[in-house]
Every structure is written in structure tokens, then in C-alpha cells.
Length: 101
Image 1 (cartoon, one colour):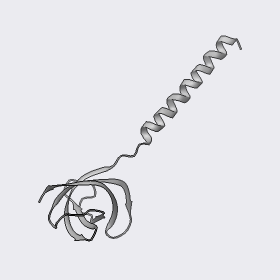
Image 2 (image 1 turned 45 degrees about the vertical axis):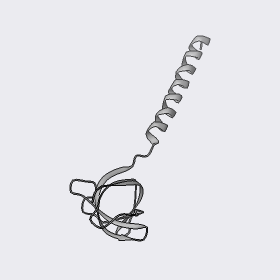
Image 3 (image 1 turned 90 degrees about the horizontal axis):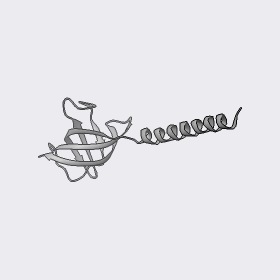
Image 4 (image 1 turned 120 degrees about the vertical axis):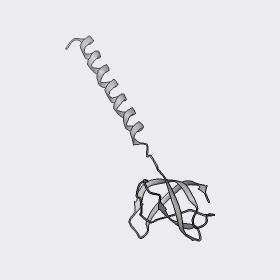
């Protein structure tokens, strides 16, 4: 193999590796679920919510670390995608805001 050909093949291999690693880190980033829900029960440090019609997991009761809300409040919730298979389903809330009382 000629030296120029070797350098060309090596360059293509290095560029391919760099692109592959870059794409891995771009698509590895976890995206959170964002949905609107109504508070149906409130406990100390936890609330049980039901996603509104048309949202993901519509009609499923979800339990998350939500405080300072009242029954009937409508929330916009951002939660991690992992769901604990308990009853009600457990979610890890990243943040939330009250959009209607």
C-alpha cells in the first residue's frame, strides 16, 4: 500500500470514529416527558395526579414528588421517562408549574 493511500484510509477511519462518538453523545441525552395533569390527592411531599385527556399515560394515576399544590390544580409536569411499576405508577418529577387552580 502506498503511503498516500495509507494516510487517506487512516484519515477516513479517524473521521468515521469521531462522527460515531459525536452522534452517540448527541443522541444519548435523555429527554424528559412533559404533560399536563390534574392533582387528585395530596400527601406530605407527594401528590397523585392524572394526566389530562390527550396527554401521555392519559387516565393513569401517577405519584410524584410534588408539593405545595391543592386537589384540583392543573399542572404542567416535566418528569424523567422512567416509571416505577407501583400503584399508582411512580414518576420522578424534574419540575412542575401550576397552570390553573
